[in-house]
Amino acid sequence: MGIAAADRTAVAETYTSKPVKLVVPYAPGGPNDLVARILAQKLAEGLGGSFFVENTAGAGGTIATGQAANAAADGTTILVANQDLIVQPIIKAKVPYDPFKSFTPVSLAVSAPEMIVVHPSLQVKDLKGLVALLKANPGKYSYASPGYGTTPHLACVWLFNLENGIDVTHVPFQGAAPAVQSVLAGQTPVFHNVLPAVAPHIRAGTMRALAVASSNRTPYFPDVPTIGEAGYPGHEVGFWMGVFVPAGTPKDLVDVLNKQVARIMTLPDVKERMATIGFDPTLSTSDELIDHMKVETDKWSKVVRQANIKID
Picture (tube, rainbow, N blue to C red):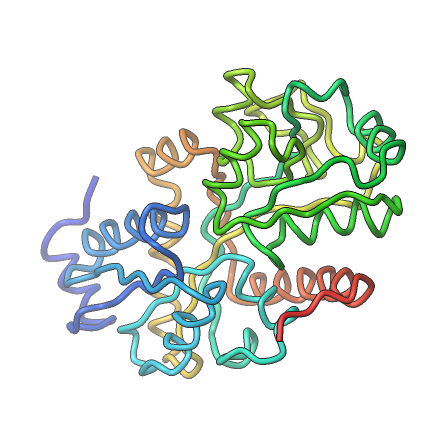
């Protein structure tokens, strides 16, 4: 149930009367865009005023993220970012922001595990079997990713190349959608990607799930083992999305947003929508999000350094 008009006005006065832009560093239609549009609608209902989404795709999200970093720190710019926020500075020589200095984290919003799947034509039933097949056939097989330097790409480098010394070909695509189509066609039969991207195809039998890359099994596919249960403990990889504002934004505005994100992501209709997609509402304090970013940065920095992955 929405907040009464008088209450909305009272809360709005503690935030801002100006239009508020939610920056999405990707094209419309993706997961960041979907979550941002839900947030914009519910923020307007809870705080009053105007909240709108602005999509600016390109350069792995760094263009829009850099613009958000340089926006006025007055509450009128909110960045809805995923793990690319910290991965891009690791793999690129220069980006127009510092993930820890340019922003004040507000809260995590959603998360989802990644899944390791294969085309049904591959005669493997589990992850150990896939590793054995790839090892026995160096250079024969390939895996798809939504782009060079994305976390699905880095996850495969970590598991296949660094951990097991496997010669397997990486085929990067411009986004998850074309990568999914390539896997469905059997052209790149191995895939490591976020659960919402593969869930419909696992249910349809057009992809076979071998493991969920998380410490716990997912309730969406309770029969699929965790990556640890499949024989590779410590290889947890997940998708996460958070809300950020430019550094220097007043603490009272950050606190209002944190409370609003917590309210929104626990609304029954929002939880139902997220479950349909395969996302889990995942809330945090600002400090908890910073700690999460540090852990992610350490993890991916090691992979990038060991594999010598760089984009100039």
